Length: 211
Image (cartoon, rainbow, N blue to C red; front, top):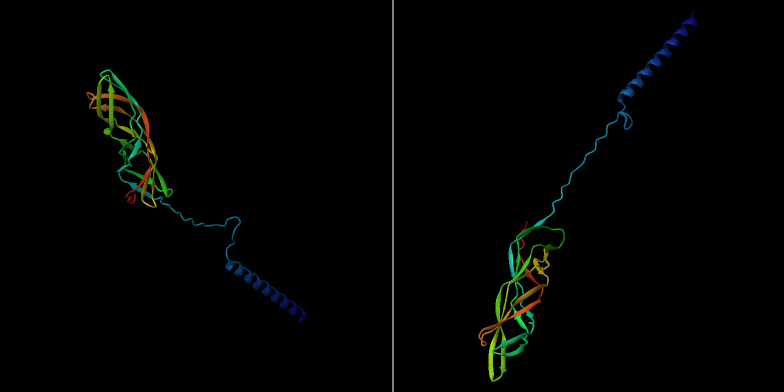
């Protein structure tokens, strides 16, 4: 009878220990952190957007004076009252054209930017060239000579230096045409064949307000 009682007590103790172990496992499971990765996990990514602003500059409408340049006129045949001769004009100096830069806004992608739509305009004018003397058959006449030329335009390659605040106008070619007039020979005029002249390049400062 005593043995049976002792066996029952041991069985009850084993059951109590098993129950306590199960309770501890359940508690640990409830306190464990949620799994990471795998099926059912959630990942949050934060993305920051960056906006880059490209600077611009405003070019004001500007007119610049190109430097004077030299020109060589072609020879012409002169005939007056039956007398004829050849006139070889000397080299002359012509005032430089006006260089017109239109107002515009440019995106600054480098230190030197191209300037489009620039035009060099040489206005029509007249220049006292030299004198000319014609003698034949008892006729002797001397006269001053005036070169009258028409307007001419060209589009020089032009850039703006945004670092130094200057405009660089490249050399360009103008085509001139006109006539030589001889006031002392009854105001005789002789057409001059068209010829090309080169206007040298130059640089000039320019105001560059922010765009």
